[in-house]
Length: 204
Image (cartoon, rainbow, N blue to C red):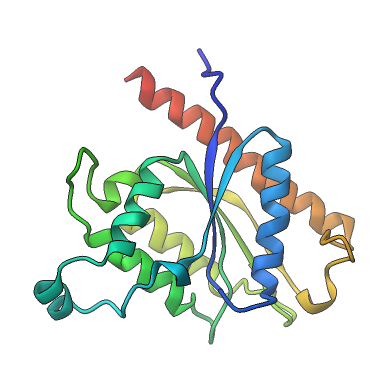
């Protein structure tokens, strides 16, 4: 039996720069998720103020507050929308560093460890780039990283948005309807699977 509570999603962009194309794409994905009835929380990875991961730093100072905050956010949400830009054919250091910290947070305060809060939850992958490939070269790495290290269920639908500097209209929508359709499919898949998987966990 399906829960009547709305699905809760996190929305994360791997780029925090002003005017980020991935931030624009994520904002549109958030609008689509909310139109489907989901509650969405935007997460600014830069605001978590996480140092570069270093085991010696962790041993001396413990886990930074931002790592615990990320664990709390995942524990309170059912899935993830991620817009991951490509830096030299790789995911961004901002994204990887934040999730590396999350992976080391131990259980405590009534919550599981960092990877316990992500396990079995769906993720939808997006990317945007001014280039012709739309950031697609990094997405297989992101897919493996999330599914292998965080046990997330990465939905098969994904979107790489090429020519992102010319892809949006004045209202923040996508100019090309076929790309908007793909984005809608990614978002709908995450919302749908988040509901199914949440209800399955609740049923035991």
